[in-house]
Length: 107
Image 1 (cartoon, one colour):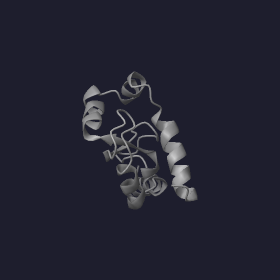
Image 2: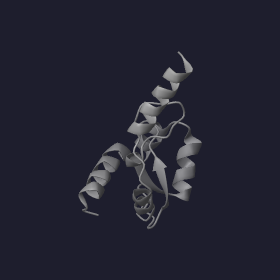
Image 3: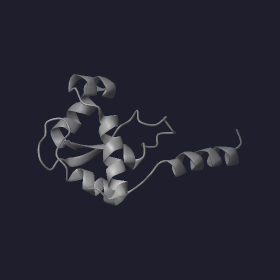
Image 4: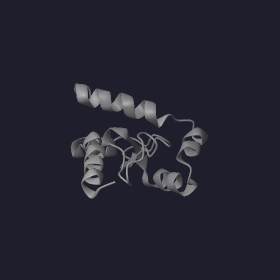
């Protein structure tokens, strides 16, 4: 692959990943999705929500609120899907619903 083709590929992946600082700030103000601690502080990007793209994070539309302790626990588990199964939460469903409400102005 030529360098210009690689840069085009990278640009295409970047352009499809939504970024919204205001939305991230909004999510950080919500209660932790796992332990329900009010005002969580962290917006965790669900790593498996979009295909991997050269170490780029998934879009900001794929974040969930986590307190610092739950966020740390998630990363220490190593297997994000297993973590969500253990805590019996569906982060994809939550993120999809919250993003839709945010974009519709319902939040």
